[in-house]
Image 1 (cartoon, rainbow, N blue to C red):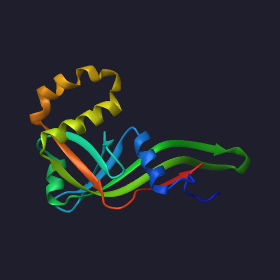
Image 2 (tube, rainbow, N blue to C red):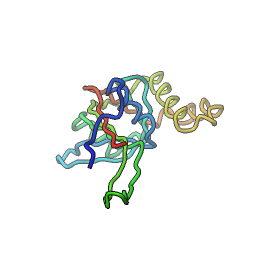
Image 3 (cartoon, rainbow, N blue to C red):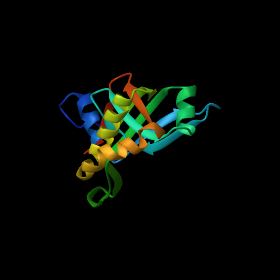
Image 4 (cartoon, rainbow, N blue to C red):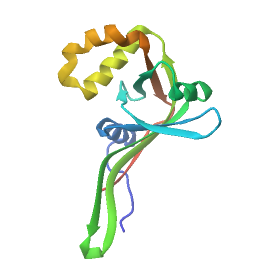
Length: 160
């Protein structure tokens, strides 16, 4: 079995950010007020090397967790290929994954909320941006935006 290694000669944080960008969902793990873990896959968009956003309802468990403990963990897998290697009689999996730690905050500024929603929509529905302004006008006040600021560089692993 070959050892796991970093998948790129580029800066490891840049490679890990690329994994986050390619992953269809990023799992955000939080801590509930009772101390138990709470993790769920979310549709995050990245603004820069340290800033991610997601949107949610204006109340609920995610926001309760953030109010209790704003420290979050992000994890993503952008490639996952289980294989049977006949020549080695071996079951294995090839993957690209990344993790990061950050601090979550609820965004209150409408300009930043709109920018975050634009990033999310451009990432997931770029072919429908002509409807963006009307949708934001209808829903901005009832939509919560959470900013996650990384507190240390992300890291990634790959088994090529």
